[in-house]
Length: 355
Image (cartoon, rainbow, N blue to C red; front, side, top):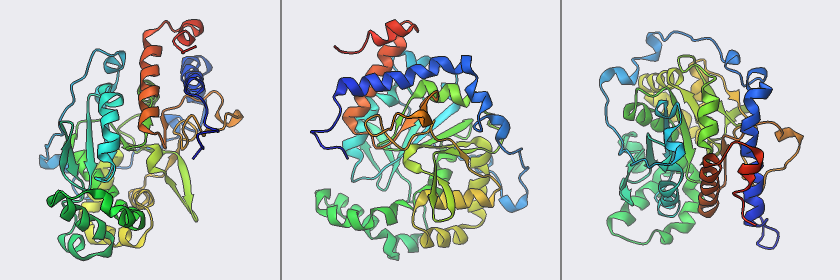
């Protein structure tokens, strides 16, 4: 993390963000999306589901719907393709009250369909937050050491105790609990909105450049198996980093949900043995023949303060940032809305920047 002395000024942050957003305007002219390895043509051909994958979850009438936010009159709420994408936030009771309100007041005002999943069911500023772990094997939840934080969270919440008292346990056990959220999250997302074409999984410190995401997804076929994300490695295992944002097509999500349903014990053992949930997801995607399509640098692991502005990032639109503080998220969203409301000319776009 940058110290306060070395941190760039907010105006520089916004200026840099503006530069990256403006690259989106050149995209269609340069044809980079169709020339790169991120083109939909490089996505594997559809492989038909067979009986070993089980029945797709949406065929069973699972229609629980998350609370739908009120969309405003912002330009971002009217973008083509917005109804096709379901945005799913994974968070924790230890951070949700700090980080979710900013999204409700900014980025989620652009997104007509989203849901928030945590390790405790509650409401935050009127937004329903679902417990993603409530259907995990009860014995595991009550006895497994990875769920010690989960049990403590629920005890503290039931007694209205300050979660700050769990800070040490969160530090030691946070990742061990978090890894159990990923595969149940897949099923919860499909249950909540089976009609979506694409599913974008994010964390509470992820920022979505919504207009760029929708434009980018228009190049892909949701009926093909697609697992997109910023590529990372755990030893010899390549996986999509969860904090940067992970995208699954409808086809892929149906596959992995059906596979897990038919093999719950196997995937519980796989999760228990692994280190991180996004790695577990990568292994699960392998079992349904959906390899990772690496999406760096379009899906970013950095934020505008820490990104190295080298040729590695030139001429690529940014779809998401990671490690975004709430105040950075709000500043970025405010700029994005101002930018969208201006003329597409270079001069007018930069006229919104502060002096």
